Length: 61
Image (cartoon, rainbow, N blue to C red; front, side):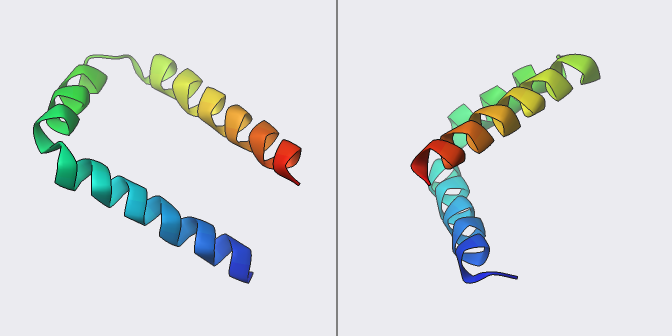
């Protein structure tokens, strides 16, 4: 695994941890709303996040 990928994964964990630490009730509310969404909608959100992330990463390099 490359050093950059490992660093990115660690940063992701830090950001996720910060959200849970700083706003646990907000996170819980968001998850309660996400449960109401259909799997198709969640997949579309996931695909959009992947696309935005890859485009942004490409623009940065």
